Each structure stands twice: as structure tokens, then as C-alpha cells.
Amino acid sequence: MDFDVVIVGGGPAGLSAAYRASQLGCKVAIFEKSKEIGYPIHTSGGSWTDELQKLNVPEEYIHPIKIGEFLSSNSKATFEYKTSPSCILNVRRYYQYLAEKTSLAGSEIFVNTNVIEPLVNDNFIRGVIVRINRKYYDIRSKVVVDASGFNSVIARKVNLLSKFKTYGIGAEYELIAPSWNQEKVCFILNSKIAPAGYGWFFPCGNFRVRVGLAIIHPLSKASPIECLDSFLSSNNEIINCLKPISKIEFHQGLIPNDGVLPKAVFNGLLVVGDAAGQISAIVGEGIRFALDIGDIAGRVAAKAVLNKNYSENYLMEYEKKWRKKYELKFKIAYEINKHLRNYTDNDWDEKVEILSHLSPDLLVDFLKGNFTTKFFLKAIKQHPKLVSSNVFKVIKRMLRINIKI
Image 1 (cartoon, rainbow, N blue to C red):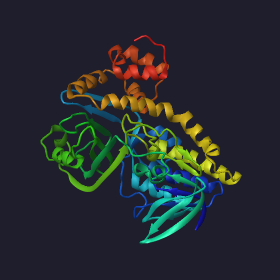
Image 2 (cartoon, rainbow, N blue to C red; image 1 turned 180 degrees about the vertical axis):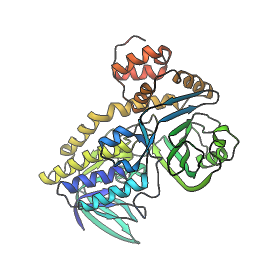
Image 3 (cartoon, rainbow, N blue to C red; image 1 turned 90 degrees about the vertical axis):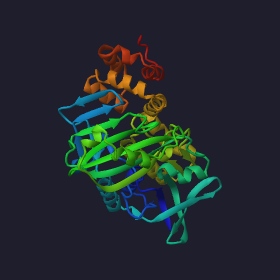
């Protein structure tokens, strides 16, 4: 089989890239290893309402959130909003919607298909080898987009990545919990519950709540599944707020925690999404970036096909565009994460207490990574002690903002 563009992975980055390339006239194939698009679920779906609206995500897939709570061992910070700055995405339904949209644009989608390795000739990727029902096929293409997530199937084969040394392992149950406030999310910052990590309560509509833990390896070797089961069976006050509960789904996933790849292009190849480390490590957020950067990849791939130029130099347009828009945000988030993941329970108690004095809008800017001079001036006015913390000193240094703290 021959295609203009082959997409490895049917997640948000791959589907977004495929849709755009198809719209621009390319013959596109998507190869997804799972048996269906959108399942199994590897993400909790937390995101920002305005950002998803800009990306034309239909409102029917967005569950609005108006209350945010942070709980450490001995401190609590609660934030309430008149509108819904954050949201929980209906991951399965939205990914299926994207797949339908992409298929109608002309892409061919292959599920239950394993991409084994790239086809390489004269130092150019010319396609991929796939396995379907125990049979192997050579799939020829002009451009390959590696959107295979944590596995980074193609990027690893051409040495753009060896392996992720630090990564988060997440485990989550979707529960029926009618007593939980469907407008409230909660983050758990407690090493006894989630060593070298954090926990979350994300309501997603119809009395459903996603409760999960993520643990950063190798900082901790604890099993997130065992920690989560222990937490849910405890008499912790927050767990009692859930009861009665029924477990109806289990989700798990891996997320890279090493920062962005030094290079995300090769001759005939673009790397996008988790495969390229394109996430905000403050709260492990990646969906909105995957959708937007996937679109950039699809545009550049289509342009390369039109101009019959698939060289690394030509594909550098993709690198320049996504890095200009997001690289600094990713790098700052990564540096913040390196501080947060070493916090003790005493550290979290102190920081949550400081957070409790911030305005709700400033908290949103921090979590979204909207770091500007205006943000710093507002933070200094509201809480000088927070701005003097190591985390804010890192942000200030990376932005090269000349503000006295």
C-alpha cells in the first residue's frame, strides 16, 4: 500500500495531523495498535475550557469545572469560579468524534495494527512495516508522523530518543459516585498516598468521577495501582465524600517526564505529542498541545508532499513553528516539575497554605503556564512569599524578567 502521509498512533496528535493533511489533499493512513480509537483510555482528560474551545472541541464533550481544591497532609486551598476555567474531556467520545471527522476528510484508519519499524532507504524514512493479524506489510509513504505516545515507536528507531529516563505511571478508576460535587476537582498532594506523585478526583458527568494517582519513576518504585486501591479502601475523609461508589472502568498510562526531545524531525519524519515530550509537566497536561501541534505537523507534511521535498531541512518548518509557540512553556513547566516532585509533606503543607491566599485567576495562569511580566507583578502584589520561592525564581530566570524579588 502507498500513501502520502502515514500516521503512527490514533490519539489526539495523530488524528489532528491526519485530519489536516487529508483536508489539504493528501492520501493518509492512520495505524492504531488498540482495537478501537479512544480505548483503552490513557489520560484523565483534564484541560482548559477556553483552550479547547479555540481548538473547536464541541461543548458536548466538555464537562465544566467551577471548584478546585488542593489537599496536602495538613493544609487545604479551595478556589471557586463563576464560570468554568477548567474542564474534564470525555476522552473516548471525543477521540471517536475526531476519528469520524478524519475519516470523512479522506483518511483511512487501521485499528488492531502494530507498527513494527520504519522503512529506511538512503537515510530517509520511506514508510513503515506493520503487522495485521500476524501478517507483515510494507506501507510506503512520503512522510511519516510518529504520534505513538510514550512508546515513540519510530523516533526510537532513528535514534531521536533512546528511552525516557523519568516518567509518570498513572492508574485511575472511573467510579459511579453520586455524592461527589460534579463541578469540583480535587488534587491530593501527600506522599503517604502518592509517593513522588499526586492524586486527583475529576468528575466527568452522569455521577461519574475519575479518581487516580500518578507516581514518578524511578523517584519511587511504588505501584500506582496498589497505592490507589489502598487509598480507595481507606477511611480518609475525602474518600468518605465519594461513598457509596461503584468501579465501572479502569484506566492506566505512561507519560514522559524528561522534557521535550532535542530534535523532533528526521528525513521523512515528524514526531508529535507525547512521543516528542510535548506536555506541560506542571499537571501532566498534553491534550490541547497534541491537538494544536498535530495540526501543525499535518500542515507541514501536506506542504512537503505538495513540494516533493521530505528532507529534514525542509521539515524543519514544523520544528520552528511548534517550538516558537510552545517550547519555552514546556521547558519552564519541566523545571517546575523537577522542584515539585522532590517536595516533602512539610513542603506541600507550606505551599498549599501559600496557594490559599492567591486569587483564583492567578492560580489558573500558573497552572496553564501563562508566565508573563504582568503575571509576576500580580503575584508580588498578592503574595510576596510565594514569588520568593525557588519555583518562581526558576520561572523568573528562564523568562529573564528583571523584577526584584
